[in-house]
Image 1 (spheres, rainbow, N blue to C red):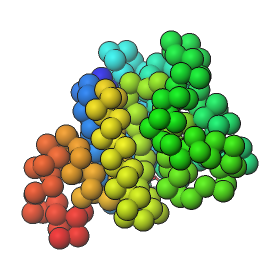
Image 2: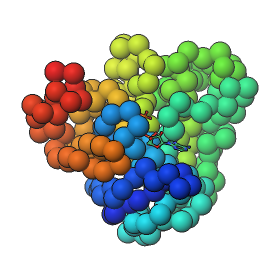
Image 3: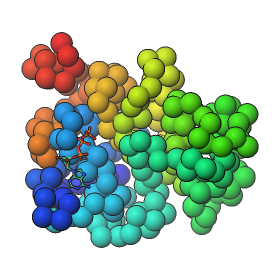
Amino acid sequence: MLKVAGLKAGYGRTQVLFGIDLEVRAGEIVTIIGANGAGKTSTLRSISGLTQIYSGEIEFKGRPIKGLPPEEITRLGLAHCPEGRQILQRLTVEENLLAGYIPGRGRSFDEIRTQVYDMFPILKERRHSLASRMSGGQQQMLAIGRSLMATPELLMLDEPSLGLAPKIINQIFEIIITLSTSGISLVVVEQNAAVALEIADYAYVIDAGRCSVEGGANNVLNDPDLKAAYLGA
Ligand code: ATP
């Protein structure tokens, strides 16, 4: 579904990715883990057309997407739920959902909104509330709900558990599993490596802008060296 080969990218003259290769097969949950500043967010932002790419190739559903504008990439079915959620705080829950809606993907706003409200009853209950009044966990649900308004086939989530209490983190990961069961392929970037590896099929470890390790999530989870480096064991 997604293939990234030899991706080099950065910010102006500051290169931060030095040749990332990764692949997501249809139906998989792929996690990207690594230390702070390793390049996880930059990898997602490059795929979505938000960070400058120096070289490399990116294919989504067999079609090259490098250089396409971000909205065109979303329209093709690849959505990105950014780090820090980036909810429109002064708008209501429902207005935020409307902001994420992409017409022309075969589903009406009402249809997808109903589906999002079924998945997140709290968003329905609070649909007329200002987003700024929602808790961190509710805002993360809103961010995911807004991404779903684009009817993605592949959804990339950047640090969905950031700043949330353990109980809420569990809820968010349950939601990720539900999304996967519904047929959406997922890329999950996480600091919380242990939880991400528990639910993922495949994992990449990024270190200083390069993929240093990749493998079945279970193998990565049980690798003694990686445990020591990333899982606090
Ligand atoms: P974190 O978990 O802290 O978000 P990360 O693995 O997602 O880390 P990135 O955010 O991709 O890493 O950062 C990779 C490198 O790029 C870091 O050295 C960071 O300082 C640098 N960087 C990120 N954004 C910018 C920017 N807008 N301008 C310049 N450098 C940046």
